[in-house]
Length: 136
Image 1: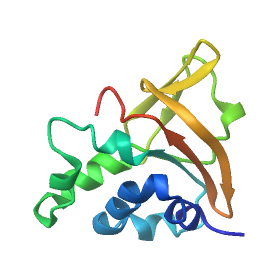
Image 2 (image 1 turned 60 degrees about the vertical axis):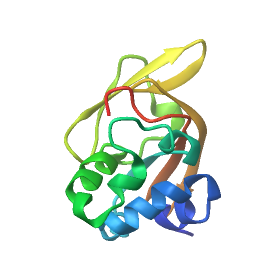
Image 3 (image 1 turned 30 degrees about the vertical axis):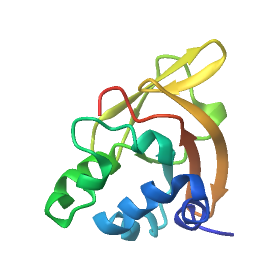
Image 4 (image 1 turned 90 degrees about the vertical axis):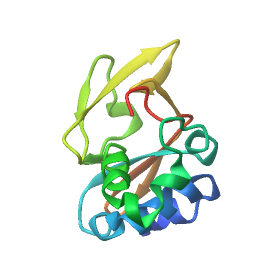
């Protein structure tokens, strides 16, 4: 069975996200036993960042900011789509909390809608988000 990192690397919609994982050094963490949950914003979402563009985050001089940004999209533990409950708070790798909300029968995580879900790997699961978090 593939790891969650292999699953993410094989999804063209997560190309920018996985590029960031590689440049940040977080790939090593995601190759561990885990389990982990990747909440990957799709390429279009990362292209819409305003404060500091994603391309600027990928610059080697911004590695610490990149690690801080991406760590908020990795949960400790395996969280399947069916595990998400309204008003639930989940711990991200960076220590921040991700708020789950159910809006019109759609699951949102810190305001980002889950587009695709439950792509299981040997060390966790991958979900795709339509945008970056409202608080990132």
